[in-house]
Length: 193
Image (cartoon, rainbow, N blue to C red):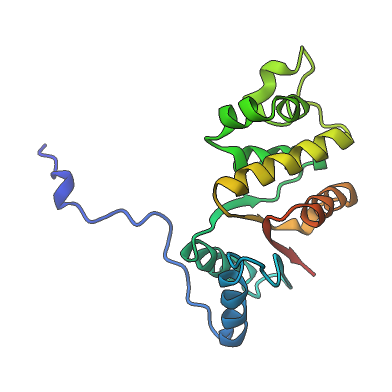
């Protein structure tokens, strides 16, 4: 059997092409303008929430928002919410933000890196036998997470997108709210009503 050379094969476009966003022209324009303003020296808004009933197009609107932010030069970190506790989500947000910068952050902020050792896999070696626990978040972990977000954003502006917060519990939402309120990072959230 003769194999077809790779250059003669049609390109693999990955996932199915997204359906067009219909009937949301006004909302799409507003979301794009919000995202394009995030990289301004003093952004008017830095937290955007897309909320609505199931099937209304939240995922497509979020994809449009992320694309607009990336077109404006922000690095987008897209995280799908899972059935997880606040500590796990905090660890995923920080690990995503520091991806590729773990050593630099550790070198410049060793105390904060140690505080994150139970949440961020790259710093697990400092846990001293304490496993990754799904317990309550310590105040020093929130402070260290904020330090990590600011560090990552100082290298390049970022957008943290946490999508599908429908099933998030009160503790997870409280931790997320604290991170959003106390950081200067841009945020995009989606949730059902």
